[in-house]
Amino acid sequence: MNKYDKFPAKIYVDSFLKPDLFIYKNIFRDALFQINYAQCIMLNEQSIINDEEAKLIFKNLYKIEHEFDFDNLEYDAKFEDLFFLVEKTLIEKIGVDIAGKLHTGRSRNDMEHTMFRIELRKKLISLLKEMISLIEQLVARSEKGVSEIILMYTHGQPAQASTLAHFLCAVIEFSLRDVDRLINSLNLVNMSPMGAAAITTTGFPLNRERMANLLGFENIVQNSYGAIASCDYITSTYSSLKIASINLGRFVQELVTWTGFEVSQIYVPDGFVQISSIMPQKRNPVPLEHLRLKLSLCNGECDKIINTMHNTPFADMNDSEREVQSEGHKAFGFMSRIIPLLAGFVESIQINKNSVDNRIKLSMATITELADSLVRDENISFRQAHEVSQQLSKELISKNISLDDVDFTIFSKLFEKLVGAPLKMNEKRFKEVCSPEHFINVRNLPGGPSKQSITNSLEIYKKGLSEYKNIIVKCENSIDESKNKLINFYKNHS
Image (cartoon, rainbow, N blue to C red):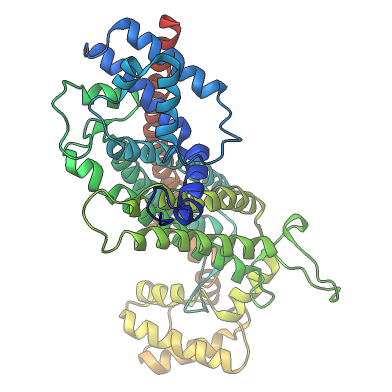
């Protein structure tokens, strides 16, 4: 007989079925048993199995789950996967006439996508809680950083003075949008395929809504073909996670820039510094590099999953099943390591005030407000004011003089030369409008860096956080209630 004539061929076992069993038993076993318990209860409620049969099935499923040595389970060619092993074990305990009824009206097709959704839901909830914890740390550091002045950059060049709180509020905003995207993905994941069976549901009087309820799902996937064929719950999840990893990666890269000797905007405490084995002076903020790396790896894992779905048939297929699901979980693993470290780094941020003050002076990062003030005080157009300020900065840069040290008469003469009218602004007013504090305080529109603007923004963010936390708590409560229903059935029938 040809070595390929009998299932399973050894090469198939070694290359796929053995590794697949490892994934199944270690990642999806709990979900498999939850589905079996829920199916047993629903079949009983629908009078497809009687009370005694339900009691026998549930009790022995519980024994299998808690007494069978799954940890040391090796692949057995008699069973294609864990589903068949559990079914066969149940049959051995209570007979095929009763155990065989558990699979009434269902298929591995709807079961497996339900398993995948249960585990993905768990990952999403955990990630969302971690993200919210990070945002809370960003909010806390922003509240402390309302008056901590920093230098903001555009195109890699010094641009304007602002505050640490203003910068972190931008991070809070995209993080809240990331949470919103992830919650939308959670809503797609949190739908039950059970009852779809292989493709077209079943002629048995199953209760799909009850199955969803017993498994903690918010709704059912309405169309039975979509329940086993659609993979947008997967692509949506990893698209949302990919965007979050990109956003956080850009934040981390900015922090890397800020720690550089040439910028020196923040001081990194020793707990986040590694030394050189040869250069005594080196203080390397290596944790930031690890964060950047892990975020890139997370991004890559997300791409892997999304790209795997590309050009696959719109049907039940292995391309969206256990192997790819478990690969995707690696992205969540990276984020669970990234977020606590990043939150700790945010908490530790110390502004290097002397360096910031010096660079603001040398870069003339407040000169935009000089132009704005000339418009208000001198009653000239912004373009005229811009020309005066631009010519002043050009001259000062050529002479390596800061705005603080400029001879006011030079500015006065330059203004009169370019505008054709004497300057009304006095030297005291000039010094005031060129100060970083004034620059920040007058920028009090919504979203600006002034203290009041930041306070208002933080209140909005806190409200959004509270709403998101309530959504997650509601989802967790629904899952906990569903598990309690399974436990109570066991207690009442044991």
